[in-house]
Amino acid sequence: MIQLLPNLPEHVVGFVASGQVNASDYETVVIPALQSALKAYGRIRILYQLGPDFDGFTSGAMWDDMKVGFSHLKAWERIAVVTDLDWVAGATRIFAFAIPCPAKVFPNNQYDDAVRWIVAGG
Image (cartoon, rainbow, N blue to C red):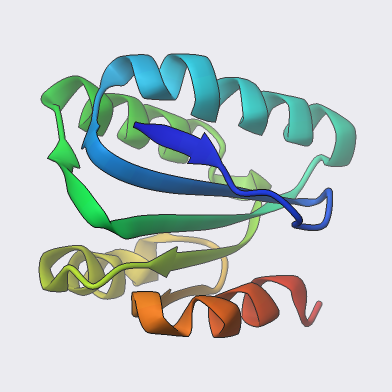
């Protein structure tokens, strides 16, 4: 399941994933939120938290995630990934070179630092 994170500035779209994430989560939560923010701001920042009770992505969710990311590559100003999963943190760091914006990984116990980072700077 994916939910929107509250209390972020309007140009920052935040999500928290818990349990099993499927394609429906992307189609009903992620994609509409991103499209709305992109329409309003053109370029946005993304905070994506994989909470402690996150169980994984279905193949449909991974496909939707990849499609969303690549179809709007130039729309991202910053991306913060908050996770305690080594494979997600490692993949984010490895593929950071292909992301045309700053991307940073934070552990779940540094969520507040991730929020400060995603909001700060130019």
